[in-house]
Image 1 (cartoon, rainbow, N blue to C red):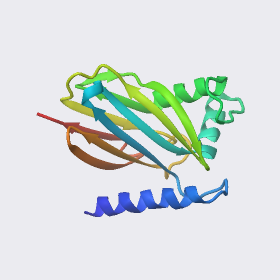
Image 2 (tube, rainbow, N blue to C red):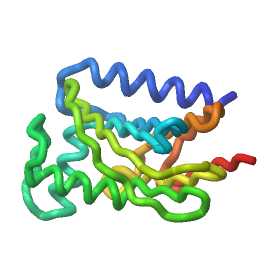
Image 3 (cartoon, one colour):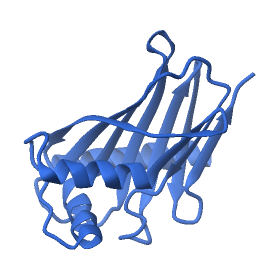
Image 4 (tube, helix red, strand yellow):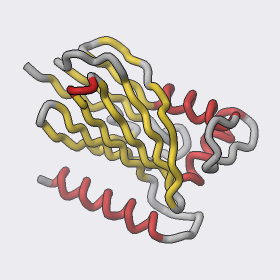
Length: 169
């Protein structure tokens, strides 16, 4: 119950912070939604991150100024894809799987990254490692919500506990 309250509070904080146009904030939170779409045999992921934090981590990681904008297919998208594949990792049925970057959308000071894992015929277990921005902020928290096989589970992941796992019969 305490975890649910914490997750709800964290989500509200992300929403409130996103409504302000200030580029500075004191909360370090991302939100990742993961859903298994059985009919399409895919796992669809939407990850929401503050743009300024993401630009800062990409700039430090790749040692060049990275600016995120609405333009698709530019050089900076390659850095974004690489970073997400490194920091957001999945094991499906105990096998590591690679993310496909579908696209991005900017809304205020947040970026939504759309990702997908294809060819998932049967889902017996899923393990998610969400380390987005942990290399930049020690206090970073990543809300990770899974909606799999009619089971919804939310996790508040931190640098000390960055993995979530669900198993199914």
